[in-house]
Length: 141
Ligand code: THU
Image 1 (tube, helix red, strand yellow):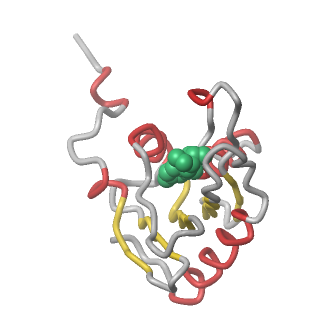
Image 2 (cartoon, rainbow, N blue to C red):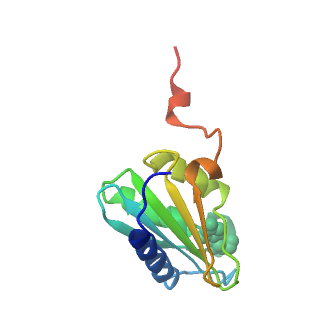
């Protein structure tokens, strides 16, 4: 697993909870926040953004990563997700896992899942999305 200092991990968790405060989730009432550590050292926060047309909801993880990309950085070295008003932490959805795989520095990039009860679960992009479809799969003769 790539190096993530305890200090930076704490900071990412703190910023992910801050991100959750901005959650626009009137339909699920499930607030999610994310904080992504860009390769530049910058931290981008995100929240879930719902819509009355439920299917176009954007998850917190993708909001944070898309903010990073839209500012010109296409690689991150860690991401933290802070979820909900339920005690349990939430696990990233399939779409977010695929987007993480696209922009992570490598598949060992740490993913930190934080729950309201203080629980923290450490995993990686590769563990969340084994055998991912990556840009290398597009190379053909
Ligand atoms: N959600 C996220 O933002 N991230 C996740 O990892 C899982 C789900 C959001 C989408 C929706 O707004 C709400 O949680 C309930 O599914």
